[in-house]
Length: 377
Image (tube, rainbow, N blue to C red; front, side, top):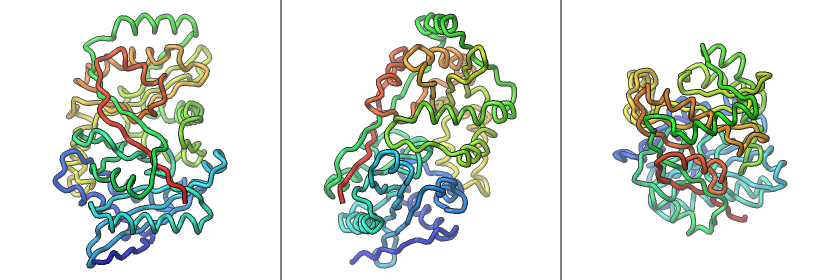
């Protein structure tokens, strides 16, 4: 019954097995949302993910009697370590059966790898950068996951704490009722912000305009707005080009709000999209032969009544000054048009009071919590 740990080479065939285990591990679980296998391969491949310009990684799978029973990735983000002055390795993409022997074998392997690389702590679950899913679910196991978050079984944090990991940071998530109209208080604040700062929302006419005029500015704004957040890794020009090509060509214009000042400088942006959770479950993480169909229905034909709030970024000097009221004043009528009854936030650091204060305009529930853990090596 001993556990065999095998290092997985970053080839397409080997990575597909690594990814497939993570999907099959949740067979029959109605809350798990599988990733698109093709996207996961792109993320884990050194020749496809521009984060490998400053990151390194290794992957392992655990086997018992020839059967896969777990997987884990070790990641070192050199940019974050330089910014923080720490020598942290990250663990991520971790899955394992409810078995202490399996968990111990996986984590002892990545810990040994981290020590050999000169690291003195292991943190996670984290990806290469903040564009990857992060944080282990510790509350909300009975709620449907999203495409932008990790789902895991309740026994995961139990084993993590048993192995000596402690809390490093928590994120919280919110489930919000979309009102039938813009709250009056929000309208008043929006009008004050427009007059005081000369701000306005931009009516986007085409995805080409979004990509060419605002694409680089948008991700540059994200770098500014998120710079001081936990573990943030600033996006490079190469990464920005990569994400512009990946996301901005498919996103619905009704799901984007762009705010500029009188000189057309980008001040704030909000990006959302229809929930793809049920569509991804139907596709089982595969686009072909027919996995694309439920995704197309969700993206183009209002197949979901939930909208995922992917990100909000506001220029630091405008944060806490009511700019978020302009975002929701613009988006709520569009959410009503598409029949969205609920909105789900992305993870927000529990200490980020500015972001969480915006939900006070609505009926909401804080329904999930996730955690990054740390262990000294």
